[in-house]
Amino acid sequence: MLSIRMQLTCAILLFFFPLTVCAQSGLPILEAGSISVKGQVVIPGPIKKDSVWLLFQIPQPFTGESRVYRTLLDSAGRYTLKVNTETNISRCAVSTDIDITNQVIIFLKSGQENTVSFEYNNDKIINKVKTSYNAGFSEEELLQSLNKFVEMIDERSGKPIEPLYNKEYSAFIDHTNNVLQRKRGILNKPFILSEKMKEIVFKDYSLAVYYNHVFDYQTEMVLNYRNTNDHRMPDSAEIKKPVRKDYAFLKNLDLNNRLYLYCFSYPTFTQELLKNNILNIPRIQDTPIQEWTKNVKVILGQLIGFDQGIFYDMLVGNAYAMQFELEVKPLTPKQIENIKKYYKGGNLEKILLRKNQEIVQQSQLKESLVINNTPAVSPEALMNAIISRYKGKVVIVDFWATWCVPCLEAIRTSRNSKKQLAGKGAIFVYISSPSSPRKLWESQIQGIGGQQYYLTTEQWKFLMDSYNFNGIPSYLIFDKNGELKQRFTAYPGNEAMQKKIETVLESE
Image (cartoon, rainbow, N blue to C red; front, top):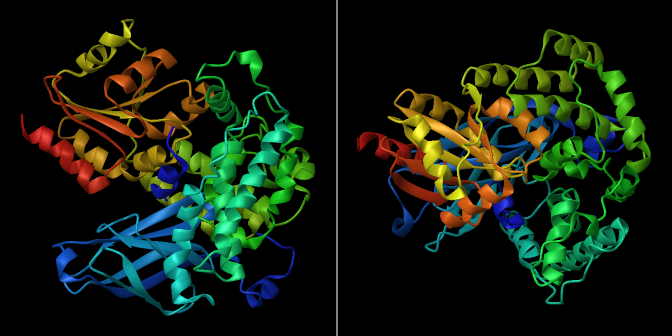
């Protein structure tokens, strides 16, 4: 399983007051926007290269994604970029492909010209940033706040691991909250952030902990058992399963707080909440929004501590986003009718219909889906048996899982290039395992397409060990004769991935 740091690197609400009060308080509000950004990146000679990509990562909480926009810098390091936003003030992470993990925070504001410029030092570190709008934060906070986030990820107590698998679910929640409070102390060490930035960073980190660990209780307890029992696997009866009432911890998250709209983790948190099999929230499909929301309140109302507020709108937006993301399926005429009837031309309607237009275009790029039976051979012969089915093709094997955020982001962003490569003789094979719940896997592959295989745990482990993979996404590229040419972990980006595949295609 990927570490939380890798997931967040790759990757890497909500009061009841009137909107005018929210705007005066400096908190973001939901608003369909399109913003032009321009600026310059200063890169010293020792690290300069011929072409540099600029990357803007922008949370789009209502439609459930943290979106990355890319553009090339010109020879002087200048750029202009147009981005869609879903809040009037957007907290973004900016970097270049000089080092995509070295990011700085900037804020974009709708209704005004936005300029964002920054400088690198010779060590490839961004050490200066200048923006036309800073939302009240200092330059040092923009430069250092993401470093604080990484410090929280890396911090360890050094204490022995406590057995939790044999205790009540509430003990795991108490343990999680104690860890969070300990890590919060990092925000009080130099460089000290403002109280508002501390709260944003802590909320962002907390959501990531909840969707990576708390929502995946079964996996966490298996790991806890193994770490406290000489790495033995537990019997299924030794780990208790949570029930819906155990999710009363959600009440403590204050999910109607608008600061969550600034959080990169928020879209994934909301999606994972909707997919959670303990809560079992129904898919929205063609259900009228008012009726669907009423059903959701029956499930969540007591658990989250309120039955009204903008958080329920966020759930609606993300419920449609699940259809967009999992199936790459545009809205049905009935769904459009429901959205227009409920939102009456407001901002949330505009956001959903704008996103729907993107999905209409993406659906045309989706690979046709083939669900394959796994060859009935030994684990040692399995990969050869799969590859032999595609003689004369360059085969790209993608090891992925439904819970793997970088896996899904790589699949989503590579649709266009895959369409082009398929026309040149490439074929894409996707391999998953029971760590992805079968029903969720069956749903997600509708939007992925390609040649899909669902292995047993034994088969998956054998292949991962055979190719020395210790994380996902991981990839194998075979030539037309079935010979393995490339093997690597972590998606390298569309351009680099396309070059790897074309190199094999052209070598024939």
